[in-house]
Image (cartoon, rainbow, N blue to C red; front, side):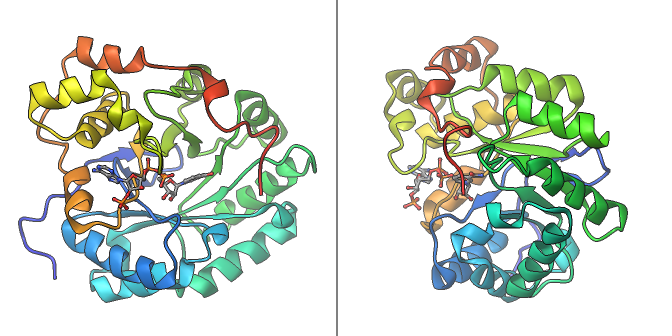
Length: 282
Ligand SMILES: NC(=O)c1ccc[n+]([C@@H]2O[C@H](COP(=O)([O-])OP(=O)(O)OC[C@H]3O[C@@H](n4cnc5c(N)ncnc54)[C@H](OP(=O)(O)O)[C@@H]3O)[C@@H](O)[C@H]2O)c1
């Protein structure tokens, strides 16, 4: 159960009024059984943001973990995402209902278009579907994932409705500068997936990162996650390890000097070092 002293992440306000914790738990590639165990443990450790997706095949386990954690539903921010087959105004409502059913919830806090899939060119319809759900009060926030500024411009022009969040691959090696600038201009919150570099975790072996870890007396992951926070980015690191899970959340009691944060940003290898959502999606 939750101790009184459990530390949670501060929150950032979203354009449509919800409050998003500044650090959350990623659940890919956990299966249902692992997600159930880790989600319950993470909530006990103070996590209040859980990220899942239809595509991960673990929403049932995430839902069971939420219930096992035994805290009021409204204290946890739950994000899920839907696949390309649901890109249509009415199809999005069906994707939403099916997601709720798998999660065993009455609502999700945030629903994302997982990838734009420009080859099928129906993400504007998907966005219209999400805007309708939001207007009907069925969820608290809506957003996109892996959208480039050109994709975002199209959905905003078509509907006048801003995404609360755009979740993109982002780390010191792929800093997505132009995407972050677009978000800042419009007030869209940036969420970082693979925030510590993903399963290969190259980022954590960068000499700049390991040197800062030594100097600050922190782990390489804590240094990188703190960099996200200081740039105003919401990171969702995945860990199934109880100790790393706790370490990753323990980043709100120190700060990187500006020049150290800048040295991390300077590791950028450009957008081409990350996934290209004009070429890949599901
Ligand atoms: N929107 C999208 O298209 C999209 C795409 C990919 C991912 N995501 C979301 O983003 C989340 C995070 O991305 P990700 O899982 O690709 O990458 P990540 O969180 O950057 O890295 C996860 C990897 O780092 C390890 N790790 C975690 N904490 C660590 C620490 N303190 N020290 C050393 N290693 C550590 C994990 O292993 P252990 O578990 O063994 O600790 C795992 O192998 C996913 O889980 C998913 O929810 C979204």
